[in-house]
Length: 328
Image (tube, rainbow, N blue to C red; front, side):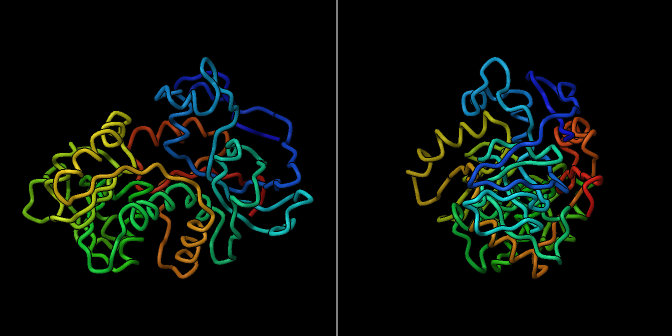
């Protein structure tokens, strides 16, 4: 099969497309004929081996242990292991395969059945492929860590990105009043997905507004924790789900300490793949409550360009990898 592989850490030039053996599922796995995959920040971190912690997490200190990246996939089940009862050959499925060793940037990938959900005919493979990591991160940040409630004032910092575009729509589905923060050229897309207000961070500083927020979901980590705390209501919650690694570690260490003083909560979230959360988002997709925002599409051979584009920070929504040769 065709796959995009790498054997050393570095920039996108470390990738090459080559023929590799098709994986064989074990008794609890399925083999998926991949129709589409999406690019995530996790792919960028693993490509570069940075922060260094990812090398320990995935077992490749000097060189990557994983050869094929790609965590979000959508496709058709080709083969099922003998212990798998939920799926059958031909079923259309999607999910996050990061707990199964990644491998989405290839014609075929294996995954355990409990990481997948069925795709309905009303949702395309492309739409399904951009959902698992970004939408579940948004859901876990808002509903889980953020404890979102109807009627709350919610701010999404980084509202035009992959997680942000899902977060705006999911927050609206919970009945929140949503403010999105993004750059000038991305304001229209954030308005189009339902944000009640949009702040252009190149012209306004939301942490200096008189407006305070019950919940801030932060995908960008562009301010200090003190700034975010100042922008919260007296019992508000701040949840960091993305941004520079240094800021994430600051939130992990100092967030609980700052939360001790007063009633405001400052938290960070590391998304954990969860089939039930993915199924919840699937229902939002099927009802049209949430619509994926796809910025651009790349062929499998163009994975290096897709990752480079994502790293540049210019994407509005998600970056997609299509495998047209596998059919529709």
